[in-house]
Each structure stands twice: as C-alpha cells, then as structure tokens.
Length: 536
Image (cartoon, rainbow, N blue to C red; front, side, top):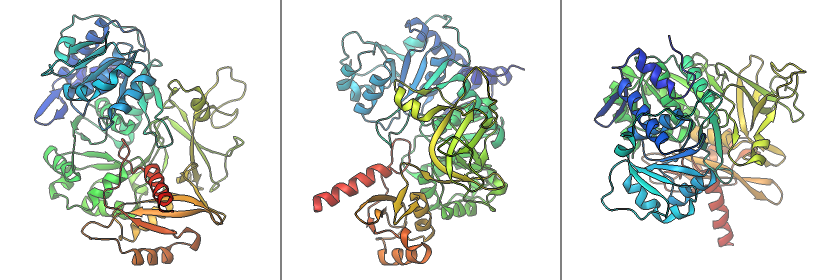
C-alpha cells in the first residue's frame, strides 16, 4: 500500500484508497477525495505554468474554503512553498509577511484584494495575483503584477513541476508575533507529514472521523486538522464562525467526532449549553495553545462525558511536542503529558545537561518534527534552533553530521514517572518578592473561583517587589460586573501572599485575541502600562 512522504501525497494516497470518500465540507458543499486530488493537481499545473522557481513562495490570504486547502497542498506539490496568512490580519500585516518572504504569487478573493490594493506596491517580489472569482471591477495593481482568476489557473495544461523530496521546504507559518515582529517558521514536507502521522496515531483517527477545522489554517494546530484527517482518510468540516455558539451548531449538524481548539474558545464554549446530540458522536476534544483551566476542563467533561480529553502542548517551531493520555487526566490534570510518537522531549539546564526529576529546566524538542529555522532571520534561528549537546538523549558522541533541536524557551519540570508540567515562558515569568511566578499559575486560581469570565495576568515593574502582579478580567457570563472584593478575598484565601494580584482591572469582554485565537497578553499589558502613564 502506498505511503505518504510528501505533503500533497496525504491527499493522493487517500484518494487511491477511497476515491469516493468525503474529504471536505464547507457550508452546503462537499468534495470527495478524488475531486480534491484532481483539484490539487490542476492547481499545481497552473503554478508550473507561471514559471515559479523551486522554493518560491505563494501567499494564501483567504478564509477557510476549498480554494484555501487546494492551494495549500498544490503549491508544495510543484516545489513551491505556501505561506498561509491569517484572514484576520490587516493589509499592513499581510504586506509585512509578503515582503519578509518575497511572496511571488498571492491567492486571495476579490473582496480581500480590494483591501490589499493600497499596500501591494510595497511587495516588490509579487508578480501574480490569483482571485477566487472574477472581480466586479478591475483592481488597480502595481506595474508588472498580473491578475488571474482561479478558473484560468486551473485550466492550464498538465505540466511536471520541480522534483520534490521530503526534506524540501513546504510551508512558512508566521507566528503571532507575541514577542515582537512575526517570525516565519520554515517547515519541510517531512516535518508536516511526520506530524500528521504522529497526531493521528495517538488520537486514533480513522476514515470514520469528522474533524472540525475551527482554528485558523495559518496556525500549526489549525492546519494539522487537515493533514491529520487526510492521512487517516477522514472528513474535515471547514468553519468560519462568528460566535462560539456557531461551533456547537456545526458540531451537532455535521456529527463531529474530533474538536481541537485553544483555551479561550473552550472557556467560552464551557459557559454555553451544549446540544445533547453533540455528546452522542464527539469522540474526543483536544486542547492546544496554552494550559486549559481546571474549571473549564471539568465543565467540558460534564457536558460530554463520553468524549476523551487530550491535553496537548506544542510550538510552531516543532509543531506538537507532548500530549496527556485521557486515562491520566484525573490523576494529573495539570500535566502536559509525555512526548508524542516519534519525538523526544528533554528537560535541560542552561549548561546543556539534563535536569533531575522535578528540577525546572528548558523544554527541548528533538526529532522529525523540528522545523528548519526562521525565514530570513539567522539571529533568531540561532537562539531557538541549537546543536544538540553530545551524549544527550539518543545523540551518540563523535558523529559527523550535527543534529539541531528546538530550545523552546519554556520552563517545565518532569516528575519521577516522566510526566511533564508547564511552569511558564521565560519571557513571561514574573519575579515578585524574590519568587518566580508563572502568569498561568495565577490565572488558574482566578478561573477556579468562578468569579471571572476571562482573565490575563502579567508583571509590571515595581520599585521594591521587582514585579507587581496585575490582572485584567471580565465578568463571568451572566454577571453585570466583577465582584472585585470577593475575587481578591478568594485570591488571598487560595494564593500565597506573594502571588496575590496587586490590582485587578475590569474590562468588557471578550478580551482581545492575537491572530491565532489566544488572549493577547502582551497587548493587554502594554495597554495597562500606557493607561497608568497617562494617568500619572
């Protein structure tokens, strides 16, 4: 039986096994595997006709729709590299990405192209714009940029593309920029296919599954819904939702068996009444993008008791690193689990030696999922992608070929049984009264009080404490206002004195998100500091 080695082969192999099986659903439209494979091949032929050189970049600025998926798999099939751009990004942010990686072809819609027109002149490498439909009015494009419709591109005659092997580049995924300017993480075919096979193995995905693609496809965990499903021959439902309730309606309507989301969405979903039918077919729900509050996890499990919870940890630079098996959730709900299949997770000291059990250290990921570095940023690449020390893990001394691992910047500890626990990011850790405190540790207690809807904690400079802990929070669902006195009383009851917030600022919800759907801690902290400065 054929085995996938390249990204687009996830689709062609599935099509060779079950050509008539459903692959994608968007609104009222469906696409089976044979049709999806044919569309990917047609897109690839059209790209070859544009004359792109090997590894040139194709930007995709669309919401979730068939064209988004087809372009994402068709571009690397020719030897090109696809660059998914979050549809929530503003034109200036899209232009930054296009400039940073010299996007040669842009796939978008007429409506989005109209918004982008003023900034396209700042993208000197751009030569072709492909629009999903014929625009009502001809857009004003910079000189030298040609406009094609989707239908025209796919009507090109079949042509062979560049030779592609699994170590070739397939994608550049841009981080949310939570620690500065967005960085483009470069991934190979091997990275993405190995990730699909690993995740599908522990989630036990198969042709009977229907996965809901609720996360942005520009987010590694969002795109994973496609690769994991296609490897398993499952069906993916593409959802562009406005309200959390829309997610529940889609889960009921499409009989979704697997949902992957980030904590902010789960927090909102846990505050809603779930249709009983969802629990009849939902096989699992998986968390990524941060630690899920205990109260939220308990609420979700109460709503769908038959669904298995998978608590996961990952980073774009190495896709997915750990997961906690559902049978361990009751015993250790605060753990991020152990390494996913075909990966090794190390906990290292600053000198590169391995930490003892329960000793905090940096999480380091080695294996087939380690990305290729940051696009056009050797300095940042050197900070995160480092040579694995000789003799560490399975690395034998004296080998001629070096091995690079991802040094995550996250502080974790490993217990005596090998389970990992997230402590915090080094650049988010707060040091107050001589103690190191993780924002997530504070937020966990706040959520457990049930007196907040959403919250975020951060450290602000303090002349004597080092950092004072500040919180911004929304009122719980159904409440008109925060009960600050009761909330701080609960904090004093459940937190050591050094961890109690110095202040809690109410804010109308929901709290702002970054493009990947996570609560934007940096934006909120910066805004808080600016407001205080103006007040002073």
